[in-house]
Length: 323
Image (cartoon, rainbow, N blue to C red; front, side, top):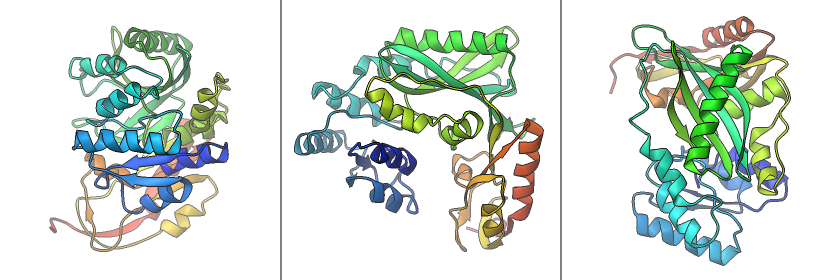
């Protein structure tokens, strides 16, 4: 359910046959062909229709001899999918796990100005393995909009231990038995506080940052974990950073520079899914994260400078206020 094309490709490369299910309104047009290309089949269904959604899961599982059903996203489709998969004997976690994780949403709040990190974990047979921690880059005051991510987060060993303990406690309390989890943590003066904990891989190309910094393929590890293999995560030897292109709101007229960015030696990934006439969302809108660059570097200062250079290289003519 809702897998990225990178995740499906890596599973297929390891001999897994994968049927991907998406709501057509939630899968971006330029990504759909990529998911379809590496899937046995790309199936579309309306996630707001719980009956149809559960029927799609059951029918696909029975017809193709599916061994496991994994939900790779979040939102209202998670519980219906897990309930159906559990009933079919195909979910590694019972629905109560996701209900417990969801029950904390809205309770775990923190001031916007508090620094935040995300913690990537992979749970195998009930044992939680911390893969790494990623710092948020923001606009700063007054809004603190997220502008990117840096991995690994510049934290002391003690800070990492405290954060790991809090996250592992939450996962254990929920009964989480298998799978990746992405936990956002606010760093407050009196200690770390969990803001959200969701049972899926981190977005915004965070798995790629982990691979750049540590040489550890978190997406591939999900599939080896299905076979019972525990992850062995190396220490980071460099930094990876995702930076969103910070464009003004309006209508895109013309743009240049994407070709130069793509061939820059330290750029490890980039996406600019717009064409002339498209509407550009303002900074802070989740849709603004669709366009990004991923870079590598020896220090956080180097990666920050390289993201800034990529942003300068993208020249976009945007008509403000156009509807």
